[in-house]
Length: 75
Image (cartoon, rainbow, N blue to C red; front, side, top):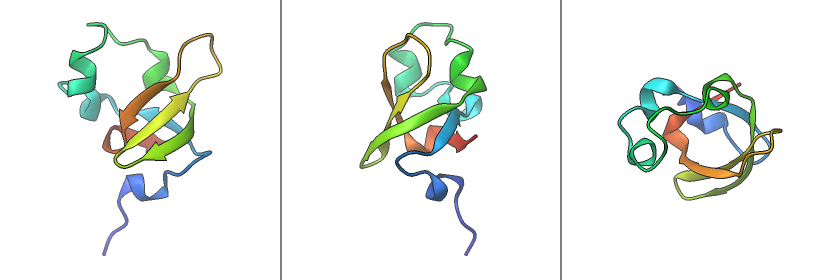
């Protein structure tokens, strides 16, 4: 069985947001109409994982966010 891309994502992983998976999602609808470029450029660090969501931190002066694991890819 092929390993899914999100299987490698764990606490401490460096990730970026997959633009195609993010577009049209509930999280995108709840955010600014034009998402910031740093989401897709990465890297963001996974601080915690709860269920299907990961808490992400960037080394920029921006708040941490929670996104679904299926919207992330390893950096």
